[in-house]
Image 1 (cartoon, rainbow, N blue to C red):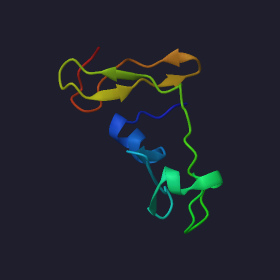
Image 2 (image 1 turned 90 degrees about the horizontal axis):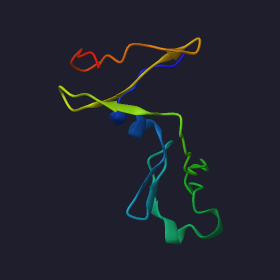
Image 3 (image 1 turned 60 degrees about the vertical axis):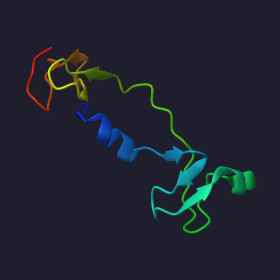
Image 4 (image 1 turned 90 degrees about the vertical axis):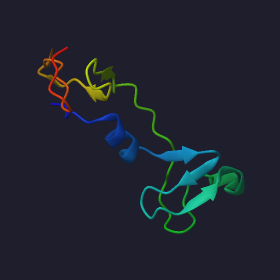
Amino acid sequence: MKIIITEEQLINITETITNGNVKCDKCKWEWSLKDGRKDKYICHKCGHDNKPVKDDTAKFIKCRECKKFFTQTIHKKKKSLPICPHCGAHH
């Protein structure tokens, strides 16, 4: 079974790399990628591995009503009805 999450929630649970800076998921320490040398994704403060994880399984649907993104659940190889969890619109 899959859980419906919003695009905003997905961003919060994936590795954060912005403008060449890495932010540790565990302790929130931030450093530049160019300063990391060989182990540029390992946090030098807590030792957590922040290597980016690519997830191609998350497919987002944009709601026609509220324009927010959401995912569709799959249970026993059957897709659920695409209902926006934000506004309740059916797609």
